[in-house]
Image 1 (cartoon, rainbow, N blue to C red):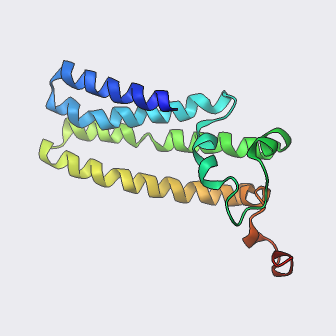
Image 2: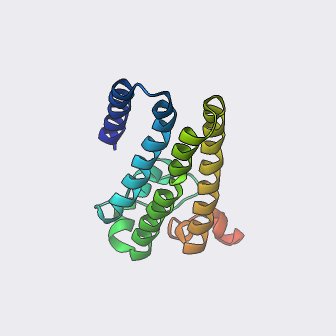
Length: 158
């Protein structure tokens, strides 16, 4: 994943220098977002999809979750694997806001594009977070992770 970050940053710099187009500079963020969306989709069949890789440091072993190693869960729980593959699809498709960024860059007045693009990213991110967490809850991720808030009160203190 680190390699993808470096490649996208270098590509953005090189393309910006080559094109010398102010419209391209505005569209560049959308193109980079599209690369990330495609990466999420491409990793669905990898050993570990991107959603899994990115979420793991934030959730594995955290207070409130009693499940052990995510590697063990990955091996033993087909639903766990399915959840992370679907999450990668959600984020891959959700990052299609990149298309809107590129369209805005080439059709809207140039002075308003940075503000609109800046506003679009947090809206997209919050929407994807809400959709993902609703999906995680309904798909049983928090149950698989042994979330304390899902256990009856009597068993929480034990």
